[in-house]
Length: 225
Ligand code: 5RP
Image (cartoon, rainbow, N blue to C red):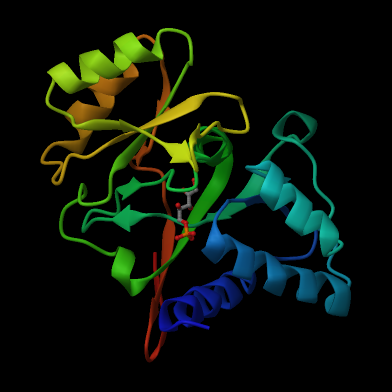
């Protein structure tokens, strides 16, 4: 296991200690969340925890179910107590970029419907300013070429995400365009601008959403509320 994976596993294990019997838990997507689900599966089987998971992707649902964690879709639950998810970058103000795994649409829908949101990251994800990680934008396939050109004209350096020689498609059958911005000076302004562009379904700026961040360091997990 790489050092980064060790830190991801560390925060995954730390996060499941916040899950209590009877909770409905939003389950994010990604390699860090995968470690968290492994640890949650262990608690469910050893402690007979009765929880329901609300997955944010097909792969998360399949992984959770394979470990005996029951899942429901968001529409089947009244509320979500806590959602635990990864992130691609988190800045000093705890604003984030998500969507490296292309799951940010469902992740954001689940996050805004959760009473509490927790992000789990290894320390490499903590940055002064967002933007060196490309900002994912999920777009409707129809007219995506024209939308791409509009993003290019704004100087946002768009790149269609691919999977081998195919265009990457999300669980909702949309495309992802990654914006190579290098630095995002005004995340709120950019979020508003992208929110208003027809054809964009959701972007990966997650602003004012998180309550707790667990950062994995060499000497242990740091919990920030
Ligand atoms: C998926 C995400 C992930 O949370 C993010 O990409 C972090 O992934 P990883 O834990 O694999 O580094 O937003 O859409």
